[in-house]
Image (cartoon, rainbow, N blue to C red):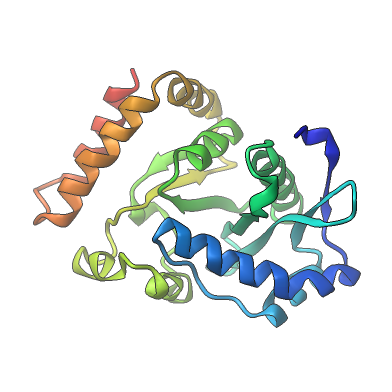
Length: 232
């Protein structure tokens, strides 16, 4: 299946008829991954479409193919591209990357000064984010808005997040800062991820061991240093 078979666009109010299907697939995908996401209602997704703060994808035959939406935190200082989901029958066609590119561009247009961030456990998403200029960061560099962190309550790793006093968890935090001019570093990082996926898996295993054990002194900084070192 070719990416040219799809249309990726800013969602319109008339696309609200797909809200129920989108919410259902979000829940099923999270269940399959063994993780949790902030649960959203069809009404919430419909509102994002009405506000012009989401991106939707369709196959050329008219069937729904994928979705992602924008959330703002800390009075617009931070933006998250949330709820990325691709219909199972259209996966592995490059659609997730196309949707992420579109929602990233929309975020930059609507909130040009905001920092864009995400939490992920997936190598594919990390590659996409790195291509866009995101860099790995500590949790302290993300929004501290309580409403955002409440969204983690439905995740299977929420107890770990609480145990670590919201300073670390199984997800890797990534951030795009429009004020920074060093996004070439992030692109190089993306290239290394592509070349060395086994090292990424090694990083994940090491992180899991560090996260579930009592936190060592300067553990977060050491982990990010390790991440950088592995991909040199």
